Image (tube, rainbow, N blue to C red):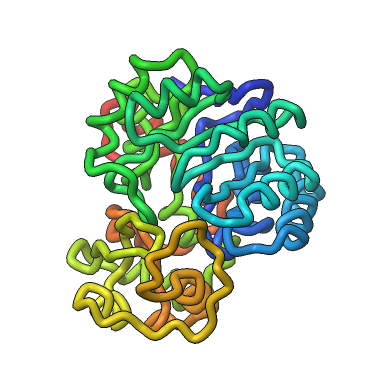
Length: 320
């Protein structure tokens, strides 16, 4: 049985694979365009970019592919509205909104003819999103990387979300192989969202040191930390996470008030940028719980071909 296409409103991807929008500056135009060109949905992470930067990134991806390109933006950031409109101006097909819930974004997307896909962690929020006009929802389980909105595993939460709405449900959290995709689709998902696996690809804008952290990680290296956003975050253990877990927060050198509500324990944007640039001791390396199952840094095309082969092997009763 072949992987089915993924329909999100009027947009159709040949493969039901959405590449997660990983901030800051991990999921940029090169990664999103490569995924879209390979048949999936490529997402650019808007959080942490200026409006001008985001518009330019979307346009760059659009020039490189005729596939489906979207943008992920955190509702928790102050520039949320500005960045949504910047993504629309650049030609984004889809807006994925997480780390909070915005009613306004549905209207902005509807007026622009852009599909709106919120990230949800409960049936109540999924139903609310459908009522406001979501084209699909991403159900993100506890296994996901970065900020976490639920304590429940994805495969436990997924069937309830599928039952509660009539729009496509995209499963996220712990998906790194084709066998994982098969399990999610068997659970009722229309597609999957994968962040961790795509962070460690050639086209990812993460530093080589960042990618190597994924390749070298063990299960014991994956930890939960407190984030100023107000949600727990999952990252790979390093000297910074050890400090954070001990309550020894780094001094904020400069605050640009990027979040609507910030605990101000430390500057998370600064720490994410540091890691993206290569400082994997003083920076924050977000990753999903399945990062220990990432063992190489392939090109996007090689990875997508591998995922399809693994899915087919799982479908035939083999192992992936």
